[in-house]
Length: 306
Image (cartoon, rainbow, N blue to C red; front, side, top):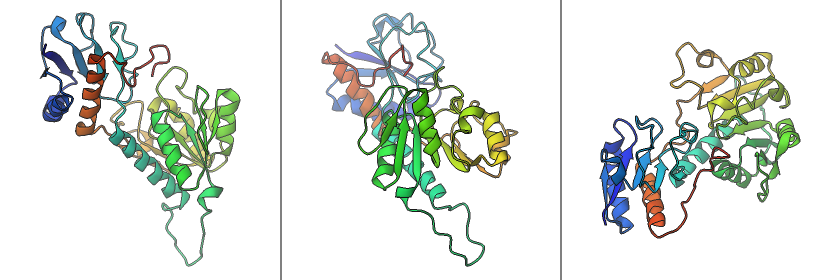
């Protein structure tokens, strides 16, 4: 039987994914047609981006899974009509892109590359082993980035909502654990999902727990930071600098203070882009798993929201 795979991901996406996704499906030995429109009851799988016009999943009574092209699922997981299993995107290329972004900006702050010398007065940075990089969020991306920095010799600590054990990384959870990680983080990286429990986790109170002069890197979710509190902490010198890739409103409005603050680096949500070839392989492999009676990889917990 030929499977019907509906690509519902918004304008322009079909053109990008048509050839690589067809090739990936064929490589899995599946007989499937990739479409952008079909009677709902005939659809076996939906390849999805939350920016899609498709918001009502009720008619798709025979759909076996919804496979997201995005790593973040906060814009879909709360959809009451979505009763089908949902898988988030965990793409090796996306992970590698995030690792390179985080390591690059950590090293920029660690080596003070934003402050070129103005005189022949040597200022030698500490070695990585004497600099603590803290992580909020130890999921797939957080673990990969933390491991890469640990391999470079940094003192790495991390906080997650659920307890974790990672070799060479001081792992914490709970309110006391959050304070412990913040208190020792010279550079803090936030890679948390967007949930009610993580909204504004960096606020006036928690920012004050960081060492004075700490740096922040946020390629996770814009809602993790209280914008006004961060700007105040920057102006007061509590936070020395921030690199921000994600924002509550995107594109970031032209009049937003982040654009003009001398100690803020804005990047336009580029830290972890999904690559069509590798993402197509992930999607096709998950379809093949379901067809073989195996569980989905990276299935989203509706209770946890990620």
